[in-house]
Amino acid sequence: MLTLEAATLEAIVAHARRDHPDEACGVVAGPAGSDRAQRLIPMANAERSPTFYRLDPAEQLQVWREMDDRDEVPVVIYHSHTATEAYPSRTDISYASEPDAHYLLVSTRDPGIPEVRSYRIADGAVTEEEVRVVETLPSEQAAL
Image 1 (cartoon, one colour):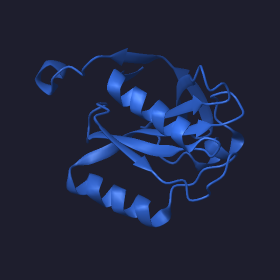
Image 2 (cartoon, rainbow, N blue to C red):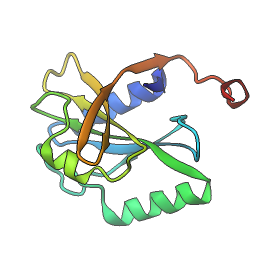
Image 3 (cartoon, rainbow, N blue to C red):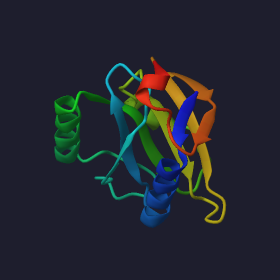
Image 4 (cartoon, rainbow, N blue to C red):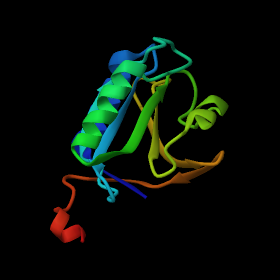
């Protein structure tokens, strides 16, 4: 199950709406060894496409280095689909390279009602998971 703060999910949906009709993408980082999605990092879609996304390589290198420096990992990797349901495409599945990450998809095909779904993708297998939205994540001490 993916647990996200309401403000983080709202910001992801706002990013997807803002970039529509192109796909939006980004990461939510959290402490290494945890599953705590804490720090939202909206990123640029290098493809600027309504049907495909690719993290800008230079920006991705910078973000991943910053996460390393902060002892963080990409807990959530998100992107939007602009004309289809929030389900990973064959391309999304083939590019999923973080087996411990949650892959969150936001469909903006109906601008009034965003569809948000999350998956685990490992070795080409896609498993949908529940998305739990909370006002605030429990403190790290309480989570231990």
